[in-house]
Image 1 (tube, rainbow, N blue to C red):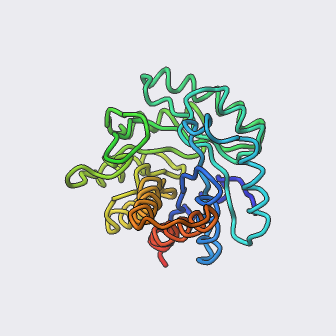
Image 2: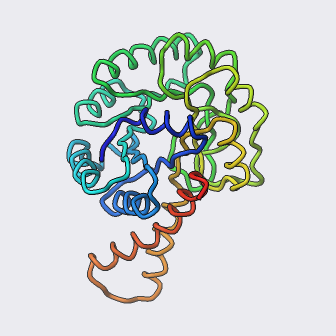
Image 3: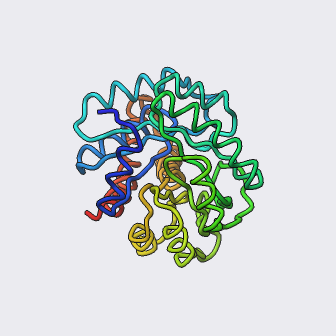
Length: 278
């Protein structure tokens, strides 16, 4: 069933667990995420980044996720990830997304508040929840996200931001990266604790891929309710395709895609179980 993302995260916050937000790009990644969540009995957030709009039909994609969500008993949310343009957000809202992320992290605090507040007003009129970001997540290895400067979230700025914008959940920059880490992760859990004390809404961790499991468990206890996962799933799919190509075998495309989906599912299962305390 398709539900509002805020509904999923509010329950996660109350019961102190986190929900995986899997970035998807095609039928197989979406099917893998939903099927894993149905098997595990946990909610899931299907995330489509603005950067994939040129290659994914947004309206068709939304219709596909809605149809798939109707067939399962677990809550499924459809989220627009890292959107920078108001036009993209409006398009996603009209297409039926249940939440949107406006990324104004490149602006100073005052400008970020101004632009985010406008997006929140638009989205809330349509019953859509909004994620925003204070600070900036840097880019690691194998990521296709835009480069961030790695600025960590200031707790007092986050408090003012939430109060001014009425945003529904907040991405906290505490040292994780988009993609895989180059060297040892340097994640500031003490900072996360201060952010949690400053704001009452659900917190989001970008850069779940490569983050040690024990760190994720501690982060959840400190208020993280949503963890974005992209690169590890991509690596599993591409690794399967590389191995297939090395075997110099010829098979039908339908077989290759089905097996690629199967290769992604163990990675997704790992995250679902870790975040939901299973």
